[in-house]
View 1 (cartoon, one colour):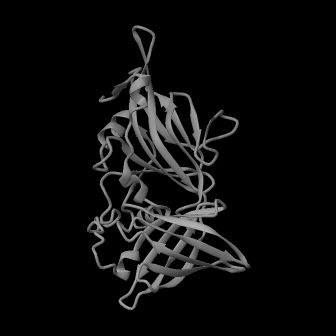
View 2 (cartoon, helix red, strand yellow; view 1 turned 120 degrees about the horizontal axis):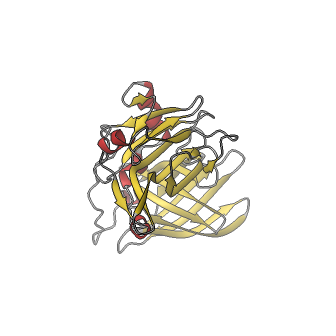
View 3 (cartoon, rainbow, N blue to C red; view 1 turned 90 degrees about the horizontal axis):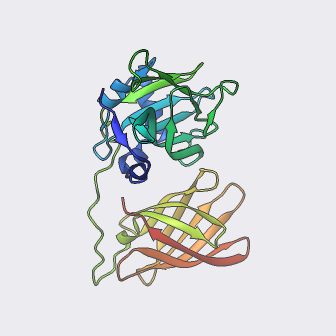
Amino acid sequence: MRPTLFALFVLAAIGRAEQFDYYTHAVLSKAIADGTIKEFKELTSDQIGDYASALPDSSSAFLVVMTNDKRFAKILAQPARQKIGADKQAAMLLIDKYTTYKGTSDRAVQSSSTNTHLYPGLRLSLDFGQVVPEAIGGDLMVVPGDKDPNAFVVKPLKDAKLYVVTKPIAGVVPKKAPKLVVGEAFEPRFFAGRYKLHDDGRRSGVLKLEVNDAGEISGTFTSDKDGREYEVQGKSGTPKHAVTFTIKYPATTQTFTGYMFSGDGKAIAGTAKMVEREAAFYAERMED
């Protein structure tokens, strides 16, 4: 048994595992379909400890659940103990973080949480994002160990399925691109990248831009509101740090006209027009 001892003040210091974010709905779906990740009928606290550090930037085990509502959930968790009073400790499954996808979109999230304590006897509904009683059901349950009070077993409930990522999946985490260096002469290729787009305080999402040698721009915009992805087309302009692009929605098209910060290339700012209404926008470059 290799549990980690935590007091409450230590729990708050758990770091983020950035590689976890790259394991999207599409990645999990493919990995389960092709057998890359292994299904378990149950996991002991010892096994969870053995599978810790599957991702190089996390000390937790990486669990995946197909919920009873057929949604994918990803979980970073580890066996732990909560100190109670001066001389007692309670075993628990410490869930550092989890995300349940709403559908097939990588941006549409059904539920998510951090720093969840699941003690033996408790159930977690990953669809609801809540610890629930037996009458509600749930997707995972922590069962006390038969002999060792510090041991427990994690079991999927009803039709839920439990999987473990035992090592990083090749190709999921992209290699870091060379850091953008904006020189004296601005080039259209500087527009390529990912941006957090803020549109008039009404809409936001992730803007991905690609640029060809002719300065023509293509890409996607993924809405924070509903996780839907929309086509982006445009072109760099005159002066070279000027850009115009459109986002094509089902019922309308929105046009953006702006300028990239020519000193460091870290943002684009300007105006956006939709159905004759003009407003401000800015897009801040996201570092991979």
